[in-house]
Length: 323
Image (cartoon, rainbow, N blue to C red; front, side, top):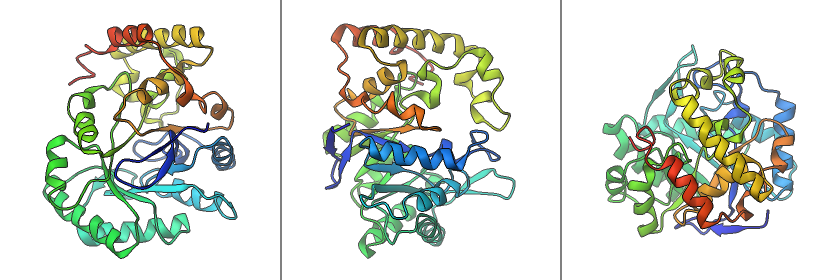
């Protein structure tokens, strides 16, 4: 994977694909992914870096600090260190459920803890994970701008944000990046967030381009039923009826197009996200090294107008995707 781009208003040169680490945080908490082997996770990180990925997206919430700590260990001694993107604002109770906080002191404590786990002095991109509570969003953004001025973070961005919130934030400090959920089953950002970012040169790194694995072509109703109880997907509306049957039809179309192009359904799904000119890069998560090879070249896949039209016809008018 050699394709590179500049991430929006930053000077960061990034590969079109970045390494996602939500899943390697494992399970035993709200929005966990079930059991995960740390050795496999470290092998995934090293293989993805060798394949040309040059940035890692993470967050304290992923495994309640486990993903960040694993990254810190895995990168010890690595010569060509990747860019590190992490987040703030999602904290957790002792029972593993989340709450949000954007107060100044809390954000600073979160960054201190992330720097320790990641074993770095500065992160390349620091993002508000969720803009909640909205009453504290301005204070949180002012805090991120201050951290950038102090040199503790190089760039700042926000995830899960609306155009109205973006306009408010930009009265305080420039928004350098936005991280929306964007995939064939979730296209609502095409109506507001992506046009806003394209017009203003804000970098977009799309998360969940394969809908957390649903668009990879490896799921069936039987496999979903067999997921561990602490895998959040087992009870998610996209993975259960009535949406599941419709979603699997989209997967069937991805499989057909993948057969035409000689690639996997998941690679087609990622290529579809990257075809949008507003998108700088896409976050791709792996749980074992064997998954890397089939997706590393997604940025090189060129979908034809006919193939794009078929995908549009199957997904654009979905009311659940544009709600």
